[in-house]
Length: 302
Image (cartoon, one colour):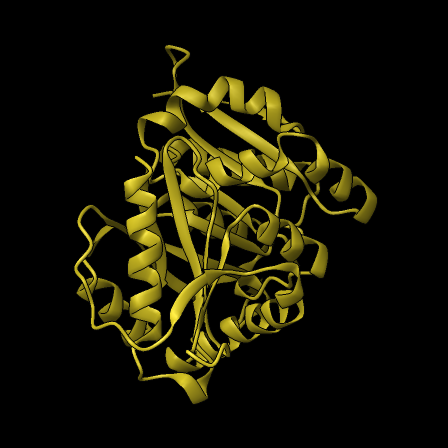
């Protein structure tokens, strides 16, 4: 099968062309769909131009003209990894070669397997580099929530008064999750969030805090607005001193129930190497959908 690649530096035209493909697999396409929901107004492209990092979307079409896969590069955090979603093998190789030919350095590739791995490996071959997996991930979906033990306290939406705490916990999440998985976090899976972004997510109702009866926040669970009928939960974070009390299970269960009650589907990602989170979500009724991975393309160790 022969494929062609169509690049776009605007979310709108890409969304219009790729929409039916994304909607046909809305859980699998959750990351791409969420980016389109966030950046359809052009803010993402404006930021990329202002800060000077790559920003594009691409559609792979088969020889009949049908959409066979998509990819994007919109990440504002270094090394600005590409995100690949179910590209045919030939298209994955072609994408790596096209980026190399136009002089675009690609040091990170996240997304669906085997497509993301093929893009990373071809990039490494072209640059005499090497590929490593910085984090193996797994996408889960829940259809029926299993009720956990409920701790004292309640889940409440965060307000702007909580913004500083939420920023602090967002940053701590990646570092602590890496420690639980027994690895050192890399820039590829530690995007830095800023206060304006957190304020926007709070205003959208996507940030929830579990607080004790005394009103002390002890846990954070976030959720993305629905895209093609799917909402994605995460990050989920409990500071070390508050763990083991059931806050995470209760919060994720309640947020997931709210998503399902609204008529949408609920999904989330885990680090496959983190036994704590994988065990927790399985106990709540989340079931595996597909394995993915974050890849680093770096210098060869030869």
